[in-house]
Length: 466
Image 1 (cartoon, one colour):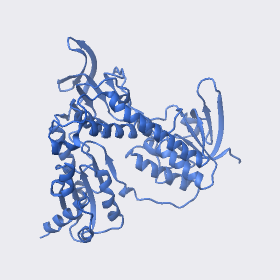
Image 2: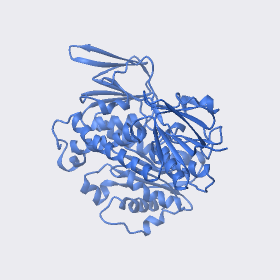
Image 3: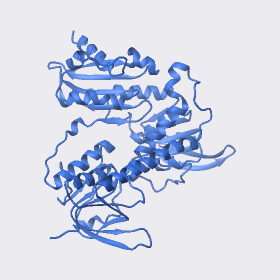
Image 4: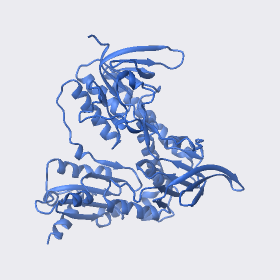
C-alpha cells in the first residue's frame, strides 16, 4: 500500500522533534504536525525552557549566588518586576524556536500547522487554523508526541492572574507578595523555590508526607531545610478542599481551604497538581488506540501502543516526563519503527530538578537498595569542604555516592547544589561502565572545581569501610 509519508509525527516538542529528525536521517519521508504557529511544544514555549530561564533570571537579579559572600542583603536589582524576568525569557524562547525550526528544515522534515485528528489507523486529518480548510495524509508509521496540558479541576476559578497554573506564570503582570503553591511535584516545587528566592512568602501544600519521594531522602531533607531558610512554609500531608478569590480592604486576594480546617490567604495561588495527556482531540478511537489514565498512552518497551505501527513518546506516556528522556524516547521509537538497532539504558537516565538549589540524581537510592537487601556504603562531600564551593559562595551543596559494600561498584550518585545537573554526568559515565568508587580516588580532577567532590566523597566512603 502506498502512503504519503513513511512517518507522521504529531507534536514538535523534544520527543517529536527527535523522532522526526532521526527518521529523516534514515532517509524516510517525514511530516510533523504542530497545532501552534511556533514549533517546540510545551518545552520551549511554556514549560522547560521558560521556567529554567526564569530561574536563571531570578538567580542573577536577586544576587542569590553571591549572598554567601556579600551577605543576605546583596541584590543586583532592588525592585525586581515581572517585566525584568520576561525580558530574558522572551529572548531565549525566540532563539530556541528558531533553532528547532532550522533543524527540522535542514533535515527536510515537512512542517504542517494545524490540529491532528486520526481518520483511520494510518490516516490523519490536519485541521488547519480557521479559514484554511483541512488536509488528510497517510503514513506507514505514526508517532504521537503531543505532550501534556495542565490539569485543571472544574470548581477552581482560574483567572490567569490570581489563581493560576504553571502555564500562566509567564503572563503574570506583577509579582505577588505572598503565594500559595498547591502540589509539590517537580513543577510546583521548582516554582515555589524560584518565587521564594525573590522574597515572596510561599506556602507549599501537598497531600503527600514528603517531598519528591523518588529522590534520595537525604537530598530532599536538605532541600526542605533550605526552603525553610527562605521562609517557605511546608504543609505536607494536607489536602486542599477549595480555592476562592475574594476582595477585602487589603485588595484582591486568594483563600485556599484545607480539609484539616486551615485556611491560607495570599495574593495568588499556583495550582500545580499534575498534568494530563493532550490526547482528547486526537480521535484515538478512529486509530484503534486505547488511552490510559489521565489521557496518557500506554506503551511497551519499544514505545508502541496497542497498535504496533503507532508509537507514543514523551510526556504523553507519563513518568519521568523530562525533556532529556523524551528526546531519547523519540530517537528509539523512530529507530525501532524502521528496523534500525538502537539501545539505551533507562536505569541510567539522570534526573535534573531545577529547584533552588538544584538537584540531580542517577542510579539507585538508599531506600531502594535497603528494600532490595543490597549491602552498600555511602561517601559524602560537602561543597563547603571544596575550594570551588567557597569561591562561588555555595556552602550548603552536597554530593553523595552510594557503592556496593563488597565489590565497591558505584550504584548511585545524588547531588544538591550549584551545578548539580552538570556534575551528575561524571557519575553517570562511571555507572554506565560498571566502575567502582576507586575510579574517583585514582582520578585527578581540575583544581579548583566542584568535580573534586567526587574524590572527597570517595575517600569518605572508603574511610567508612574501616
